[in-house]
Length: 202
Ligand SMILES: [Zn+2]
Image 1 (cartoon, rainbow, N blue to C red):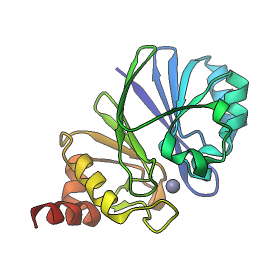
Image 2 (image 1 turned 45 degrees about the vertical axis):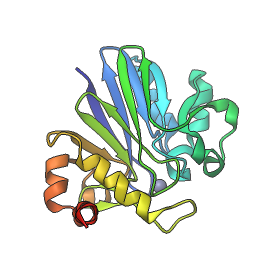
Image 3 (image 1 turned 180 degrees about the vertical axis):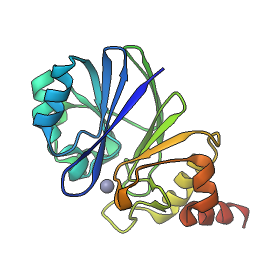
Image 4 (image 1 turned 180 degrees about the horizontal axis):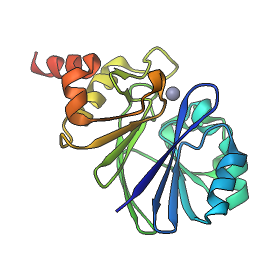
């Protein structure tokens, strides 16, 4: 059973997620304060198995270089977001579309959810989905940025809506002080997801 630490970092309310199972750890979207994250991992100490990015925007990836070098790791990034990321390719494991990754004790499912950017993904472990900037509680990510695609966002929101109702969701920012929700709650309250589901019927 995985444990999730939510770590709020930086001036843009980024949510970094430290996923652990025993001493094994994954970091999702390590943002801004690498000294803090390196200390957190080394103090316990944890065996950091992998770093995964939900997409290539600078606030999610830019500062990670220091951490990746420190732990001698490469980060997983969907290849469409490589140009946006500005990171050197040798620091990345790039891949295309949906994946299942076995990393130490973790089974990680990658769901391609383009819309906010072309390379946006959601990262699923057990009953938890890390949605990055695809979905926030009550909202979705901007679709007016380079490589954004509003129609793809609708399909991606439907993809999340089709997961089991009790799937726990954790988003890439805690805008409004909140970063977590469930599929059931979003289907009920998120106007963007509701709109996406309405479109499917038409
Ligand atoms: Zn973003």
